[in-house]
Length: 222
Image 1 (cartoon, rainbow, N blue to C red):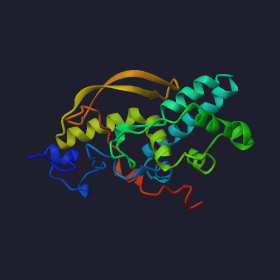
Image 2: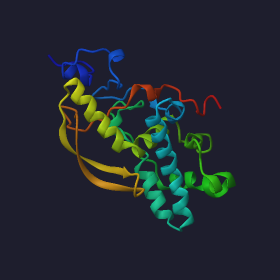
Image 3: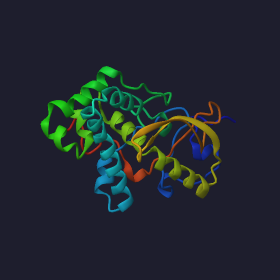
C-alpha cells in the first residue's frame, strides 16, 4: 500500500518519533514549514554551532571582498547559486522545488555593502538582516543561503544520521557545494545521500535544534 504524504522515516521503517531523532523528519514530496535560523547557531552553547555560524558570516562577507576587488560578476554568481537549497526540504513548497533569485535581486543585496558604510567597512554580524532591506528576501531565502554555505557539513551530518538510523544512501550529483577554504562553488560533486525513492532527488538533513517557524530576526516582527 502506498503511503500518503510519505516521510523518509516511515518509508525506511525507522520507528522513531521526531522527539527521538536529532534531525527534522522530511516529507518526500513537499517542504516542512520550518527554517534554519542562523541566530540559533550563534547563541548555541556548542562550539561547533558557533564555528558554523562564523563560517556562514565570513562566507557572506566575502562577497564584499569580491566587490572591492572589482569581481562583481563572481559575487553575483555565488549569491544567485546559493539562494535555493531544495535538498533540505524546508519552506512552503508543495513540490520541494524553489526558484533561485535573479541577478537584479542579487545586485540589490550586494548594494547593501556599497550603500551602508558600516556593512561596507565591517561586514555583517548577522546576515539575516538583509531581509529587512530587500523586498522578496525572507526567512526561507535566509535559510537556504545559510544551508548552502555549510552544505558540506550538512552532507556529513546526514550520512552520520543515516548510519545511526539505518537509512540507505545512494550516489548522487549535486549541482554545487560551497568550498569555505577557497570561497568558491565546486560544481557537479558526487556524494552519497538518502534519496526520494521515485525521483531519486537527494535529501539533506538539518539538526532540529537549528529550526524555527519564525526566525529571531524577521521582517514581520520588525
